[in-house]
Length: 265
Picture 1 (cartoon, rainbow, N blue to C red):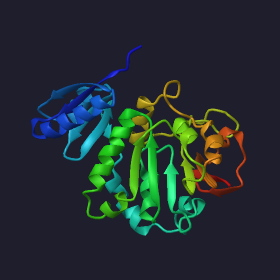
Picture 2: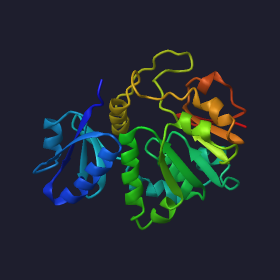
Picture 3: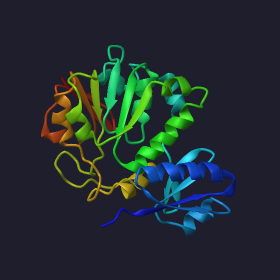
């Protein structure tokens, strides 16, 4: 079965940017059908419900079913400005202050990497899916032009790679911490299906369309043993009631209201 084709839409005003993204996406072996349209508004999104890509002055977007999303790192600035070891469990779990270089092997939308970089760490993000990688590229590009985020973004690097393959080729202890936040099915610690929330976040709805559980979603069980051989500390983010990754009990946990951080060292 051939890879799906993505429509890429932009208004004429953003045609140059769209052509640049068309070239980048094609280089990533994404089949792209680029079209200029008169407007990219709510009505257009309703009339074009299929999974597609948009380009405007804010960069690249993923859209479907009347919604659109991008990593939107600029919306994290308020949290970043007040972040501290006291307020952020992830910072305590990753030992920010002692930690110099973190590998975020499952970058997702990059929000955790951005937070860790804002607190002084150098962060390398891995993302294997070419569309999600492209969205992160766009976010990083936008952040480097942002008055507050630019200095933070300079401490972030992005690599398109399969995490399992990358970890296998990694030299021992090249990173102080390997951070894992794999996407997960909605199951609790007893493997029973949880009740759906009234409204799943827009970003997650679109990500689950892009990365369905029965398709290319990586649940990450194989990553933990690989990571443990490559860093002195591995930190795993999990939903509060989820089973341990790879069914392996951590040495320490930090528990929050909705999620927890499991540390292996």
